[in-house]
Image 1 (tube, one colour):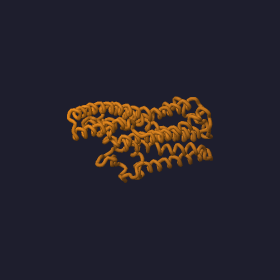
Image 2 (tube, one colour):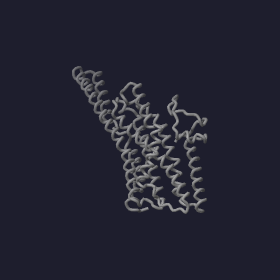
Image 3 (cartoon, one colour):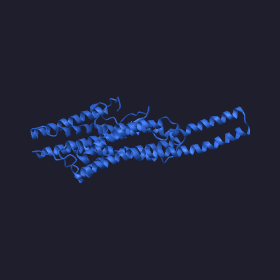
Image 4 (cartoon, helix red, strand yellow):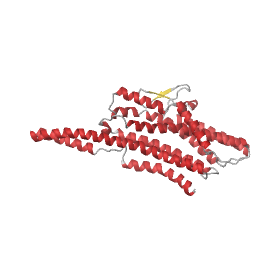
Length: 346
């Protein structure tokens, strides 16, 4: 999360981008909590706390007991986490532009236009809102909202389900840019790449940034699983088992497929550049054999060293240690929820 946030007026529509001198439009998720005059994540903490206390007090008023505090508290955490992740991703994605300038073999203005079009699609607010409503509709159709709650008053049912559907709406809002980000990463592999895709030190940094998106998504998934497990019905219905199994596979695919596309793109670019460089090395070798002198031999040795370094370049967007670290973080929440789905161990 960001460590600071400009204390601007509530009606301010822009804020400083992580790119110096750039202006980054604020998402509606930031404007919702702009009344607090706090950094966006603290704003969502305040709003979530107000909702949690309001729902808990209202249910106590009708039931004369604090019922289902744990699932309500998990919903409160999700209310903070889900919008904050989307805002964080919006800011971090803006750092991708300079990286694209470094690795894509196109004029800068064409890269800017391509990047702006992708960002406009990924963070299209109308589509994000539509995704939030659509996810709620689909989940309701599949009877995913049968939690086994038991109340004396119908008002209590209405209150807790409004809280649930509001939190679930933000899940749908975040799901849209999540999928679009994966599609953007895949589209990058279709663009012509220059030699910097092998030499750039930013490659693994950007690979880890994408992996952080996956880790945050898996945290949200795990919290939704814990929410379901904290309800009276748990994950007992076949509908909920199918839904949670589907999202587990979706997040794994989100992590693996785009990264594998990047891997294949790097391999292809590496082969093309090595083939081109090998021809030049052969030319230098012929010169050295035709006119053997100190200068030609040193020139050939330099080309051979460069070719060896290119051949040893990593073809993954991150190292093996990071892969192990990320896989463990992503897999563990799935294992916990899937064990409950299959064996009912919790």
